[in-house]
Length: 319
Image (cartoon, rainbow, N blue to C red; front, side, top):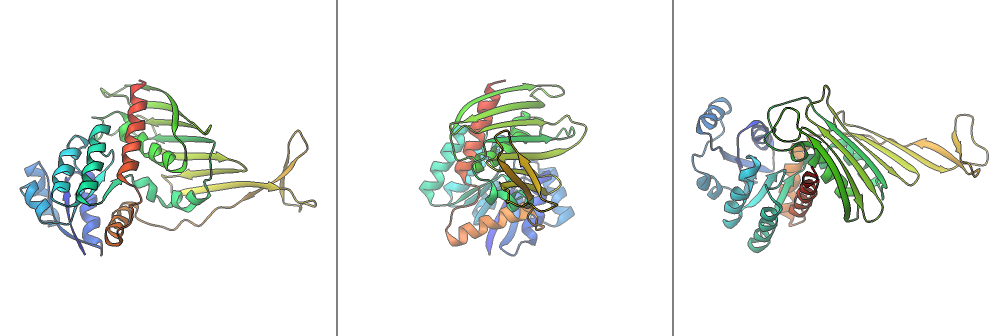
């Protein structure tokens, strides 16, 4: 088992602590939190071992799970990597692209592995259809959330939209050509609602909307490609796949047939896969353990996290 320590015992940090304690691939050694009063409260309530020194925790583990505020990701990662520890680092990877690039260099120099916590890659609805997403040419993503003061220290692009940026970059095999975007601050000092249009060199266009001041929650992305429409509901963990193929010469009574202006007939059919239940956070943590043990590439690499941050910052620069 890999010895692991968690940096940060806030809302998400406590979830990581609970899941790592359950995992059969990790031995949870303990945690560190800069807020001593919160740390002692977590230790007393849940029984996790509290380290009052960041350095002591890093020295005691094989893997450092960084779930601190984004501004501290870089310093925490540097300390862990310099001591030869593998790092799992929550999204966004760092505060700046330059910091992310430095972390990638340090990981290579010290021969350790890193993974970024873009958890939607492990959403069972997306996993069920990702192999069917093939050269999408139009993507529409909506990520709407009710207001929550937690996370409002950063623009909604880094808080919410970055999830969809990562998903889109993972399925569009092309470079970003152009970005146009707008954002509005309603409650916070940073934009609370944003829209971005990303154009890729292969002609694909992605339209993303993110809001943290909505009256309802929504996390849905639609992919349009040649002869197929794929919808993923990340919130409800549902997906829908609608495909088209050449219509048979003698269609059945219940076949759905479309005919275009040129007289070409297509048959519409549904190919909705089974969605297995999973805990996405536990799975992302355990796939990282597998990557370490088998010396293979993590599913969400530091490069992936860097590129998602790079595109997010390009969007913010448009505001």
